[in-house]
Length: 273
Image (cartoon, rainbow, N blue to C red; front, side, top):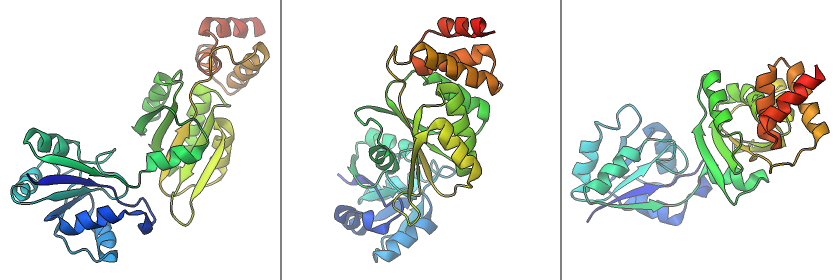
C-alpha cells in the first residue's frame, strides 16, 4: 500500500533536515508543498529532483484528486514552508482523507518551532498547551488569553512581529505583569534570539524595538493558588488601575495571576478607594 509521508523540514538552518527526510523526498513520486518557491530552495540545495506541486490553504481541496491519483501507484510526501507539516499549516484534510481511504500515513520527524521555543524558554516543559496563531483582532486575542489565564501548564503560540508588543501588553493586563514569557525569534537563523522576561518587561522592550522575523511566544502557566501575599496583590491591582483598567477587569486579572478569588481582590480594590 502506498504511503503518505509527513516530512518535517528545517525552520531556518538547512542543516536541520534528517537523513531519512532527504531519502524519502528523493524516493517519493510526488512532493506536495505549501509554497513551491520556498520548497525549491531546499530541494535544489540537496539536489532533489522529485516532481513538486503546491498544496496550500487556498487550493488544498482541489489538489486532493491529484495527490490521490499519485498515491494509487506510489508514495507522496507532504511538506510545509518550514517545520512539521499539518501543525498550523494545511494538511489536516489530506491526512484525514488518506486514513479514510486506507493509505498508510507516516510522520518523518524533524524541526518544530513549538518544541524548539519550549525547550529553550526555561519554562516548565512537563506539560504545555499549544494555542496556534493568536487572533488578529485585539478583542479576540484578549478573549483567548482570558480563557487560559488560569491554565497551570506552559502556553505556546505564534504571533506576528507587528502585534507582539500589543499582545505582551494584553498578557500583562490579563495574566499579570510578572507572568514569565519567552519571545523566541528567528530560531536557527543568523539573528536567533530568546528574550526571557516578565510580560511587562517584554512589552516595554519590544515597544521600543521593531522586531522582525518568525516569532514563537512561550508563556508561563498560572502560579499555584495562594502564591501571592496580600501586599503583592495590592501592588499589582494598583498598577492595573493606574494603567486605566476598570476595577472589575483588574480584579479578574490579578485573581488569575495570584490564585486569589476575584471577589477578594475586588474587595481590596474597594477598600483602597
